[in-house]
Length: 75
Image (cartoon, rainbow, N blue to C red; front, side):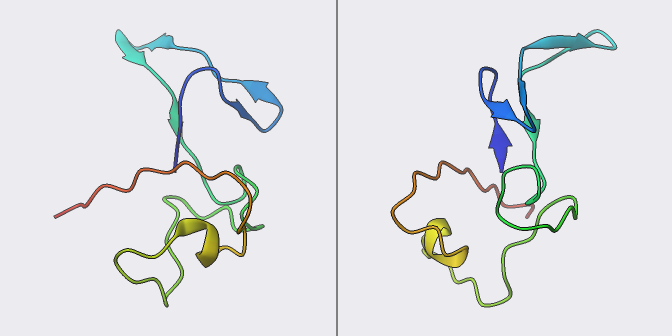
């Protein structure tokens, strides 16, 4: 999951910053950083039972809570 500038992660509000001459506008988060689980695996993986079209909130038992996520294919 991606956190954009202005989003609070681990108690800090993210800002756009220059890193080695490249503008960084947000960060990819582990499951632990966004409160889905204690798993600090990076990059985060969806549960093994995840199917195309599944609601992320349902996969993590977060129904009724706002979840914004963007998943991009690596293929």
